[in-house]
Length: 271
Picture 1 (cartoon, rainbow, N blue to C red):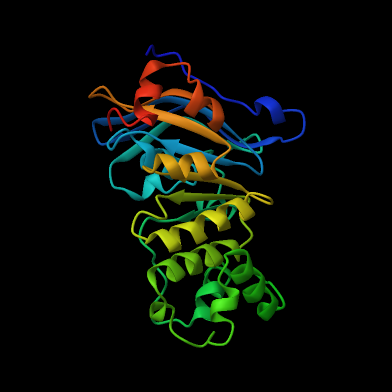
Picture 2: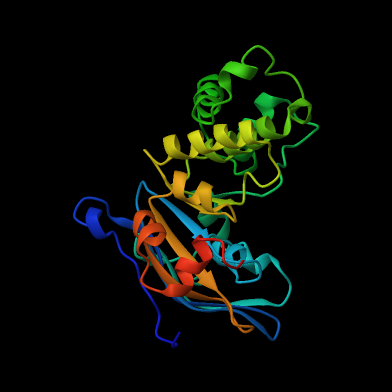
């Protein structure tokens, strides 16, 4: 692949769904290690985009660029632009904490606060960010409902978040992210440690969330990518920085990709 960046836009939806988030020529480094090269992607609003590719190609690094979590790592650096509603989130005047309220993150391993109750976990982001939001009871019910957890925990909101099963804890983390009303939700392999039943519940939640917000999910599971995403972006590395091979509708990526390497990957021939 050449150094020319590849861009995917809203395609069929571009007249109705404006792209609230995009990267232009994004690079990432860890010290002298060049981890990502020249990534340009547009994420249509209220859709799910799957980020796929073999281990080590920079998928998780890429989504951490999208809400400025990359800069938490000592020695990390980036170049290029990440635009939210046309504004570069890396401009010096932009508050990184404000960015992370708008672009939330759910991690691979569920991480509820074990010393907090289920209710307190949901509201923790609001309190940490000092947001003034009335009707906390309504927020808790709404967010747990959207995360597909309300019916299971409504009678034990005072129980510890750590008392839930792994799948329930992950949905609690999703509810916690939703409480601050993000516009985009990043998910880094959210189902990799879960059983099939819990994975199904998370996938149902993802589809429902995309009716209101933009979801970007890193996954190694090709079946999952094909089930939950509207668009897919395929990343690869040839021993150097990870790069974008192609991005398109999920249907095209899985049935008629432009690059033979994409076809080989989604068919399980390597990875």
